[in-house]
Image (cartoon, rainbow, N blue to C red; front, side, top):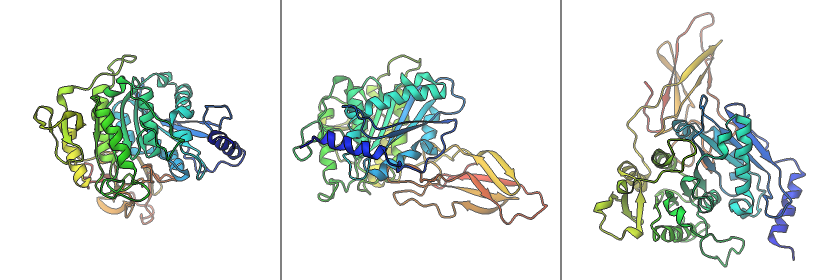
Length: 439
């Protein structure tokens, strides 16, 4: 009998000879850059084709880090990775820290073995580091291959992000693991999954485990019931050794991403502020230990480190008071608050009766919609009815792995009721996902 690796190697080789199923590619023109690698037939290398798309904030002279938004397992989730770098909300975080936003898209066929990419040791880790070199050449930012990483991953992407953290802790500023963690103990039911070991350097990396409550916390059966036990085992192993790891259980969801981005981006914001080196080439900085807040595992209230009454080696670690307050809202009902208005749109252009503009998302709450005014009167909301099956309605829509809908929605509006020959005055207003409007 052939080995699993050879079986899937043959599958990938066959696929590469066919037309790629990933046929709706958002154009990657500066400030977007893309590289694609074909499937490899060499042992130990990546057996699936993969696309890497990166967005680099315009005007940045020196990139300080790479924020990776990693999709999950399955053909649908893999396709959703094509739009990850175009997410205006995640771009706001990248822009704040002069970071690139990078989104891989592995071309995993339906029912193929996800471990062949979501375990970095099966070639995806090497391909990822190669893409940083090649994207650095394309973008004119060769420092991409040397700067730190902030990793976000969903499902198999969480397995990948956690695995990269354990393999390269000196490069990882922080890691957010949504519904997926690396395996530390052998699983007799999944012999294809290789275990990881925990190096001491990984204990200094801030990590957040983020399962849905219906993945084994409150719902104990079904397809995703094993997610929480795996998260709990990973958490206990890391925290028991002093690791900076927390747990934020989504109280509303199963495997879908829900409203996690409103805590994940805020949490990564704090971690990047604390850890990114001030000078290029310097090592990552350490978190400030005395700023930490702690909470009981599966609890909903956090307190300052000095006030925590329980065993700290079994406690949820949170980086500071501000994040702890947001975490408390999230684990209660995911309604992470925001009291600041979003940035207003910029570069409004009017050609005939069509408007176009640029937008910077609200770091805390993203963008839900735009209001269009003509001569001081509201004439439209774009989209008319914002929708999102997985959480708060957002302007770009969201796919299952927390990436914008494909094809991408454009920042344009055509005023079909404008009076011909009359000069009108237009204004565009941004509305964030808690309903606040730009000034």
